[in-house]
Length: 63
Image (cartoon, rainbow, N blue to C red; front, top):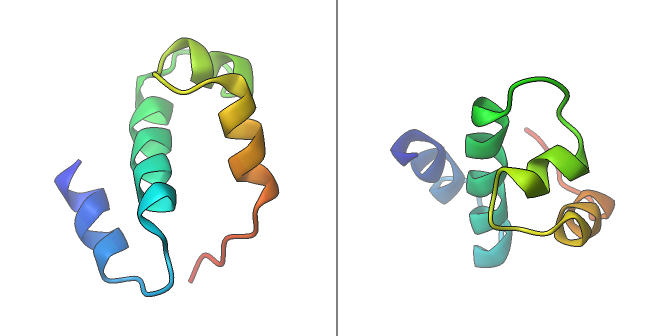
């Protein structure tokens, strides 16, 4: 995920845990077959469903 990491490094104001979460999120979305929801995201990654819900509640400004 070198491309994602390099793009996130150029964006100011993103914390390290948020960068790690976004890299995991984007790589997991590419792996999932079928619906992309919190349950399937947690099934195919190392993060829990609760972690996905918490991060999606936070505001993120996509440029």
